[in-house]
Length: 303
Image (tube, rainbow, N blue to C red; front, side, top):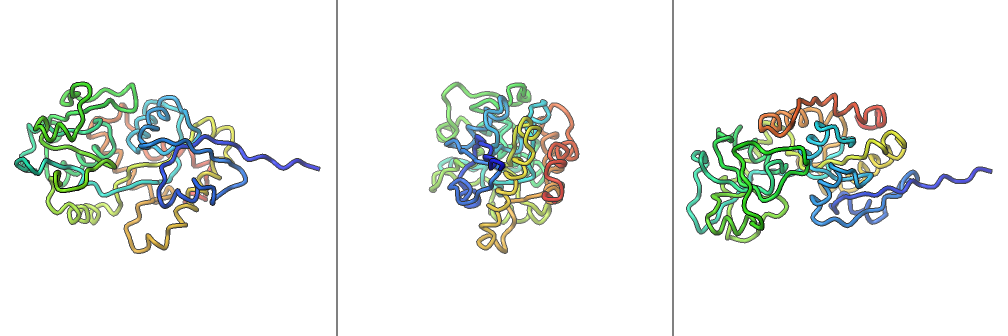
């Protein structure tokens, strides 16, 4: 008589979203895996440890961090699963008590961002360049942290603020003219979007590109992918079931949770192009190279 196979215990890091809540609460399960979630808040604090040292078996990861990790040869494997996406044009803000910078005159201005390689920063720069003709290299980008990958060095037009500085106090003090913030966007009237009618502008961008800018994806370690492909398939299936659990409330809205190779190919190709234009990658990557890491494992389930 055979002994039942025990599920493989996996260390995981995922933010609690509507589509991951049931998975993290243990309401969605798979007999192949036992996901043990670490409490990481904010979730971006998991990204550098995952990209550098693979401290989790399964982890949410910013798309730029993943692409840099892949380009630098880190042993992480992308699952074709987006867990966070957002329209970005409201993320560029200024101090409403000061004169509003003219978007057509941003050359020579100082714009703060947590790190130059931050995904939200990449998207805002891509939009400024594409939609508003802003010469990105003529802006003085001011950062308060380094990137998630130790190998990456910022371009020459990026400078690090003094230790201990934070973006909102710098904005209040006039040390920077605008700032890019993501999940930490402040509420209230003190700070306003620099881009007029940001929501309408986002819809214009969506009309051109037909996807919501990707913020976070999910990766597994190469060690897990090579040693237990069944566990990787189980994780991907659980993530898909999480998306399906909120399908009714998201019906009729732009799909922020892209799943599968076909859905991700076009958006990833554009994302790679934006990253290359901004000097974020040490070498050229292709979507086929990225997908090859998981295609043999997930097969038709991810189309």
